[in-house]
Image 1 (cartoon, rainbow, N blue to C red):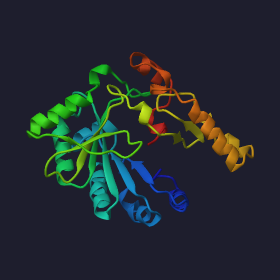
Image 2 (tube, helix red, strand yellow):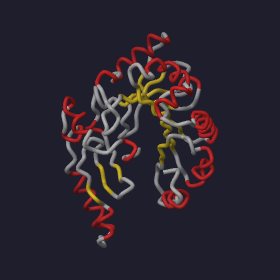
Image 3 (spheres, one colour):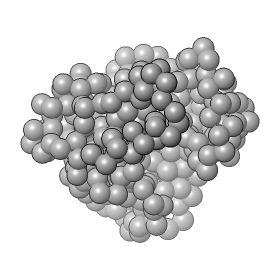
Image 4 (cartoon, rainbow, N blue to C red):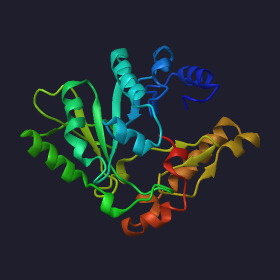
Length: 260
């Protein structure tokens, strides 16, 4: 989103809607220069995707330069006072050795580090062997830091299990999609850049809202259609079982084309 030529216009338009929360998820590379605008339009939360704190590994995972820009953006966002989260997809033998390094950030900075179980998407070469269950991460934190994590009360619709420890400034969260589904409490829907509505990351049956608008639908008709689509949302994981999720996900979009 930050690379769109009309980003400023889009941001100001969203800021003018009077939303209680306005959030953005970004890889952080071009974030710093947009922070004044984000403050201006009332962005309340920034989620930065960062899977490693090692520059060489960053280049390997992302296939790009920019580690220093991301770390600078993290500091700039914290200084701005915007609520900040770090999204960390944990992968066995790739970055699971950095879990305690990320926890150190949560302990010393006012942010939430969210450890995300590795999920299958088109083109991400998912393998169950790379999955690190959230309880394994939880245990590693308690044992490695000789501390006790205590639950943090979550807001309605929050998809993360949140915890903190004594004397921490921030907190950690766990997105437990693969080993402990939270679909019953998930209120997320995604309107994609091409106008398709996606009610679940793993549901490939997208419906076009853009086409409705182009056909002259009123706001009321659009809202009615959105409600209709949501009412048919599957109970869990887009209607798939865990054991078949990887094959179904390979038929859908890669996460980079979904967003959020």
